[in-house]
Image 1 (spheres, rainbow, N blue to C red):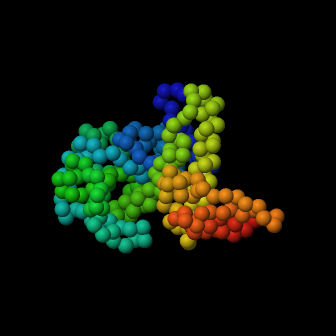
Image 2: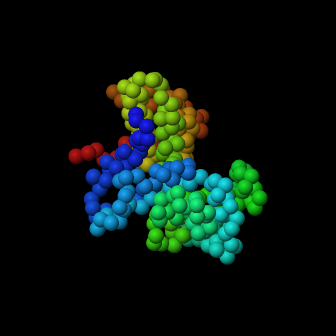
Image 3: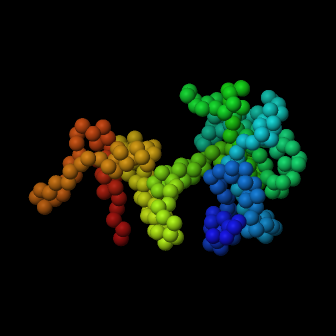
Length: 271
């Protein structure tokens, strides 16, 4: 792999060829970690100059010392209430824009038109706070975007709605994506394909099977899902030309497992 090559951006560039010109496209990478130079690759150059085409991003941003200084400069009256996914006011949450409070020398190194928005929220009991957050008891999260229209609360709610992307990445890492078994490319390629299949099967099982009486399994991490569902000590019995899966009645999630199988069996067969 050549220096400076980014597989993620490579796939993003290729995706432009399959997006219809009338479709709006918003990118939400998981976490930028301060790597702002990646927000405007060559594919984004000239964004908005072609009629009918535009690209917008919304990226989680690491809170650096410069951003902490900017957060300290936000007046109390500037903070506005944050919104929930349904448009209601999010209790205990506020948003503000930091773009105009950041050192101009720092802004000059970032892509043109990039806006930095911060959300503060009262942490839940037992949450771990940084030394900066322990001063006033607020938890801060920062993201940047190039979207110019819309209220800050809407932009922040839109960004937070994509938290499931980070969950899927974390689940895939827990399922094998985070550690490759070999130095050989072909072996790792096969491992990656198997990991992707496992991640897809897990995601579809959560969506189609872990509902209703099985909803308790939908929020499990891969490790917990393997223990409670996939690795359950069951016994497959044959009787009257039928196969029966016998799950121990004492298993705490036995009813949820039965519900998962029932929901999947109820899916109509393809024509």
